Image 1 (cartoon, rainbow, N blue to C red):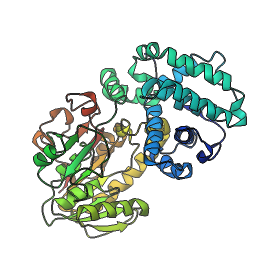
Image 2 (image 1 turned 90 degrees about the vertical axis):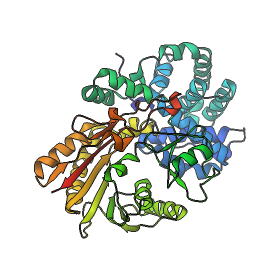
Image 3 (image 1 turned 180 degrees about the horizontal axis):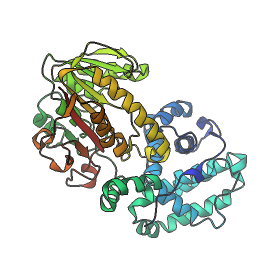
Length: 456
């Protein structure tokens, strides 16, 4: 079995070369932004979305070109192992040293040639223009031109050979999933990450009606999956606050909490607020706690659009104190490996060390959540991680140390009858390859773990 490829060979020592506004050829600034995002995400281990949002304004792009740059970068990370192997196999001496932005430019161009609906000549020409703009990479214009033209000629053969699903998965993750789930399930997880993710929404009410209005697929869990991708803000119901974007698996923990109208419920680590909105829409008196002011501003804006209310608190959830609540929801910070299909950069920016640091933080947050749960109250703990250290093992350790908490198993009816998403302990464990539908893009959901505990 071929293991996933490491991304380290793609790092460069320098940041972005020039301001994108210097480019005059149509489409050049978008390609420059894409290469800059790829370079910086790999070099600094940063979030792709955050990096794109921070860098984009300096390139002066319109909405369409900004979206193109993001699509190129996301595709590059989704198929990074395939791209890197294709490039390395065609560079007899490997990638040149001290070549500045040569490698991220080649990766961005290869993503367009192999996987995007972009004319080959445009991808090649604009990449060569970028190489010319930096003194370090301009020495390798002929090499880059020959490489990209060869990728275009051999596209079909490259894709036909890229059959190993682990090719686009870093080695440590492939090994972790095989140990946790077995090789067949691990391979299915890796394969699902190669597909474009679905787009799901949660509605305040009338899911059947909104599924019809939006030409969506009503999932058994109550979420709506949109058949077509496009601008969200122009769809019916957005301005009216009838719905919000939320992955179908991410909507399930609130279902397990089963909030009742008037109950006092705290949502710890609440931003960006999808679960807070669910709780408020169900009539609970919600307190949303998060340490990030900017993320809470986004949560507040979402609640205003949805005409929902919640008490918003900026605080470290591990240290925040209040009177115990009827129910507590803790969506703990995690490695986010369950979201790789939607955020493929996660696979290449996280490490086992990152996961282990987060495990310690999760344990502290669980202690705080326990203190905030009143006797007889409910505590739902969840993470968007595929790693058992952040889910099953975390809860086993918690229950051993807290005899006053017991597990209340998930019933199939609570999650749309999807028994495949309930593990042997009665906890919820969604995997990316589950929830099959009529096409790959309409199938699957994020990897989530959730457990429901009752304080005696």
